[in-house]
Length: 230
Length: 243
Image 1 (tube, rainbow over the protein chains, first blue to last red):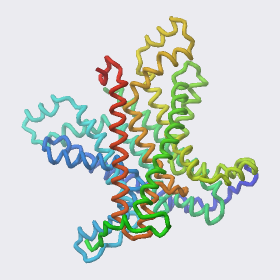
Image 2: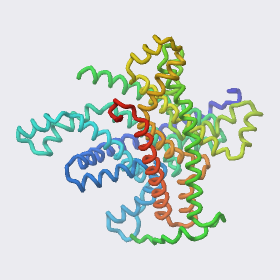
Image 3: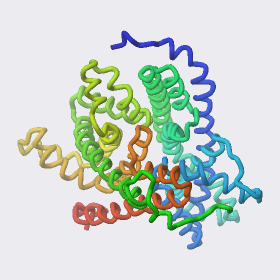
Image 4: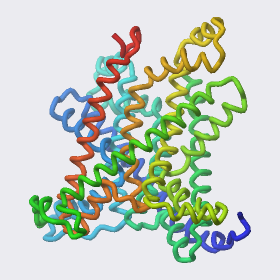
């Protein structure tokens, strides 16, 4: 079955696949994970703040994002981001937004919902004595969160956060629906140009599989190390 | 915002001749539900078997279960659908490949099987977690009573495990429904696909996506409510969720 395989098409397009495609995928994954973590932590703090209205709004946002398919959210933001930009900059017409910015905003907003649930669980896993002791020492709310609660919550949840980032890495392939050349998009472009669907899609599958496998293996090792310190 | 809103668009006839735009979206909704149900049956069947394999004493069985789960978990769903849809017919013997390509409704079957197998890895992990959460005494007592391994799983372990993992299975079912939207890439015009088509025909972007959003929320509410009744009925007395 490999007799008619054209391995050369993979070799010829390696530069395009990795320098353009994989760079896009990894940059998007990294920045979206960072942005999602920051926004997610803020959402988690809103939900735990004790202000009913703030908590309700944050809860609704998380529930909304988690009930929608990512593909629909990608479409939503693709069309919405120009209008948000117009509103933010006060210009007279919807602004032009590049493919990267649009997908970055999408993934930050979408992942924020999932990261916020992880951080919420992390914050709730800290024993009540910790913030109480911080308060007794005279730390303000923001100091308590910054120096006492959040570092521990982040550390406890690190394996889960990283696992979610691996899911995010796989999910970035869905920008394909906007014809953006991420790694899969690049592979698909070459595949359709050269009529080599089998080779390119199999290669893409192997690359995604290898990266996710190595990453989840690393997370598993980290998990045992963190568990040991406790 | 200088966007021209027109909420009456839903009652205007769609250019593809299948009725109004609302009819278009509703037919997408039906297709989403059909695909998700077929995928869920596959996910439950394969997931339960693989989950059980991972808890068996046999090295080969648990290794196979491990490999199965890792295989389906470490590739994006989109790539898996492409493998089933574009690659599989090419690497099979030519006559089989030809037969596969001529199946009517190929995107539907590919989506149901692709999403189903993708989700089965997650169901397998839940099943394994459920079985492992049971006290060791259950398995030992079943063996002491003279039950074979198959009987122990059938009559003792699985009935308990499934009742315990019902809540996480609900969210896996919701993921299955959401994941069917990925099949838009292989040409399945389900709810997201119909919303996208409506946007392209009518240029009423936000109305189309709002309608799809509302329909997805409705599906979620219905599933969550129904499962809550089921969970309450099946909760194991003595466990936290039980009475």
